Image (cartoon, rainbow, N blue to C red; front, side):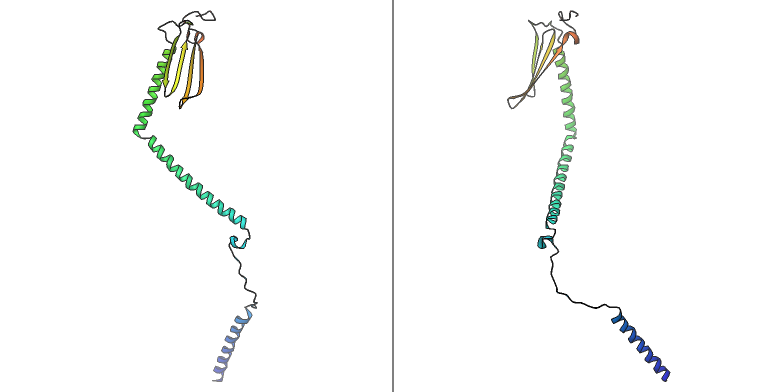
Length: 180
């Protein structure tokens, strides 16, 4: 019985020794210091405050740019959808054909072979196209085409094109170069 008691006693001492070692041997000393509160936000502490403000400003600016970009993308998409309707395509096609026919008729009027133009009796014409004025004068040697661009009743610009008929489309009368 004594050996059982000794074994029990050794077990108890061993357990106490291991606990003592764990509590005091593995922990380090605890040192106290004054409790100091420091703000983590630079707006309160002042540390790196300007960088913090720049970061906030950049985030706000990029967010606003993204919202504006998304809105513009949506408006562009709506405009594309409106331009791609059957009616819009028909109107564009019709407008293109009308301008093509108008350009053909204008060029035929410029090079009118019904009468013989001369300096004394030139062939002249004028059309008003969407508020802009196109005038031409065919004097038998040259054709002068003048385009006046108007906006709200004010002349914006004037373009003049001189086409030498003698070298380009043939002469009705004697040309300056003598060959007709």
